[in-house]
Amino acid sequence: MRKLIQSFLLLLTFASLTMAQNTPLFFAQNPTLSPDGNTLFFSYDGDLWKSNISGGLANRITAMDGIESNPKISPDGKWLAFNSNEYGNNDVFLMPVNGGDIQQLTYHQANDKMASWSWDSQNIYFTSNRYNRMSTYKINIGGGTPARLFGNYFNNIHNAQEHPKNGEIYFNESWESSNFAHRKRYKGPYNPDIKSYNIKKKTFRLHTTYEGKDFGVTIDRRGHVYFISDRANGEYNLYELTKDGEKIQLTKFNTSIINPFVNADGGKIVFQKDYQIFVYDVASKMTHRIELQLAKNNTLAKSKNFKVAGNISAFDIADDGKKIAFVSRGELFVSDIKGKFVKQISTDALGRVSEVYWLKDDKTLLFNQTVGGYQNWFTISADGMTAAKQLTNDTQNNRQLQFNSDKTKAVYLSGRNEVRLMDLETYESELLLKEELWALYSDLPSFSPDDAYIMFTAYRNFEKDIFLYHLKTKKLTNITNTGVTETAPTWSPDGKYIYLTTNRTEPSYPYGLQNSHVYRIALQKFDEPFRADKFKELFKEEEKDETDKADKKDKAEDDKYKKEEEDKKDKEKIKVAIDFKDLMKRMERVSPDFGSQYASYVIQKEGKTIVLFSSDHDKGKYNLWKTVYE
Image (cartoon, rainbow, N blue to C red; front, side):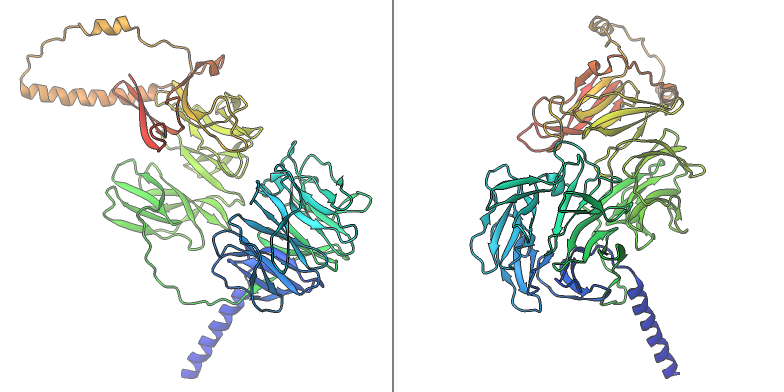
């Protein structure tokens, strides 16, 4: 029996290791190769690793306190240069490839990003913001003071690569190839091109003139130049720049690559794609994924205590006012309204919950959770007695959901360009329209109070505009179209105004929305009550009430019921009417004209409209303020 149990445990251990080895390694970054192309170096989980180019088990080669990244091997194969933020900011470090002491080369309080090596293996090029936004510097492997390659404060040189034949420095100088390298499909005057400068001859050459993005040059010792571009299909693919200036497309992927690197001797190019590392063989013109495995310490799962207080990222209150659902650290919870009795709702351990909403039965939750890295919609019983049911299965993020007035429909955003409508009876989703939403920084879409319109924001020339989509006629209208950003739109409960945040004189690109204020737009032309009429009401005599206390109590209860019914009927009677002519001329400022304000929320009660917003106009500190309209 003992031998049988031991054999069984050994089998389980072997099966566990086999499963770990067959699991693809995601989020390995910054691939680089030894000069002969046989050894791969990369960064993962804050450390540097190396493996055979064919894949297999990778070995960790650094274990510093900081995060190590951007490894680069010298052309002679003796040195490994890399970045580490062990002391707070990124510095350049150096170590022998075969192991040995680690030497710190740069000590500036700015960020120094490793770029490349000189072909004599004696100098390192790196990008730093120590003087301006960014520029390229050169430092000897023996240390010393770095020298700036190019003068002038406005030269934002980066991605420097030395050509082995003529000594020219190839580079980019647009933030679209540095800070915003992840942003695809940019076309405009600030697009990155491949450029080079011969320091000895003082000659400049422009190698590409495509209006989109060409960047990320990597060069082998024979002078073959490779780079990435989105010129073919809007996704970054690998290209070769020939001596004659021809641009030859080498890959035709439908998803982008990033961080290409060719080995010094030439023949192999590694890059990141779909959060994994791939290699392109120049001779065969074939690409394959490098199957990497890491030795992990697979311990038994343990229960851990985490604080929920101060870490709630999303919540929703049930319509009965008795229950609250909330998200903390990617986990789903339900409690009573006072938070005395809390229960964690079991969801997929590999997914992260982001949003949660109560459906109209007050018993079912609608939430989104990552599946394979992408947010998808699920439903689950709020008591946690049943398993979650997946409603969507998309390879793009489904997010920012809002209900209509009776919770029969929901609008949400999907990916970077889709506005969708979900039927909450069948849970089927339909595509309403495609617009330039962007996958980040998008505003919450919303139904109008009468459920006739859907309001959302989309980009025009890097600035947000507010759009209205009429569900019945399917007509889309851009109601702002000003050339500056209008963001965070919200309806007034009576459907007469749209409230928004904007700076009416300055665009938000590229520094973001600054000095913004809260405004409102009247959807129709109407006048406020005349002051003379309001004055007359002050002298209107009230009828004397001669009923006894019991009758008064009954009457008060009747009046309360009647008022609730009238409010309910008034809400049902709301009909949004919009006069689109001269709509923007009816915009008026709600918040102070000093400081910055944002995040408006509108409440209407007892004939008053209360607009809540955040503002720093008092002593430069953000606090909650309100403007009241009577």
